[in-house]
Length: 239
Image (cartoon, rainbow, N blue to C red; front, side, top):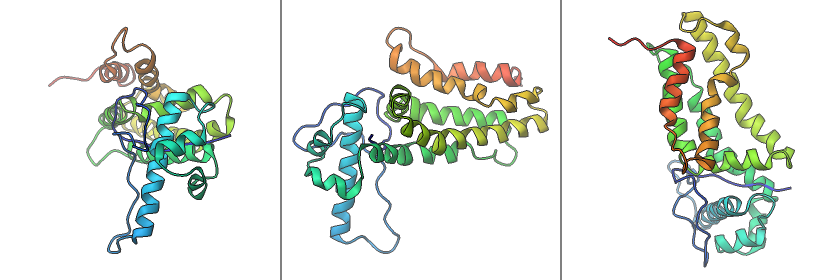
């Protein structure tokens, strides 16, 4: 079994394959540097190699799928020796898990934060949707989600990791938000808290639709979500 890495802000299309050790234009989040103490040149080079490996892994996973991706191709794309990969990752699966951890997990914390003082739950969910569509569904992060949907049944370890790190946290945060909306009178159906998946369903539809059907029937994911929230909260009153 094997794993992969993270990414930010590029079109949700298979990346161009690397040649000659060059990395893709769309980069993963840069490693953190401890404040006040710049890393040594050796540590900086190690961080750059790790970043290059993750970028190459993502390209290979998107282009080939999890099963067909080979460490040799990742090493070639990153411009490193195959043995260098093992200094940073145990195997493909650990790489894929790192992609999830760095590209998707940080968003979950932001997207499930409680409403700001004075903000409605609906407005908070609309902000969540906008962030998800702009930073996941419409970027290469969405490719990671699509890979999990495609490969998860054959590699339950990956599905388990994604559920633990992303799905369970997201559902818990969404359930808390629904319960708050019920307590405030924004939502009249308390049973919705039993099924927070209903609230986030359009986000999953958007990820899958943009991959398979966008060229046939472009989807306005934000407008779809607005209609969905009207069904849950009632139509927004206009002043």
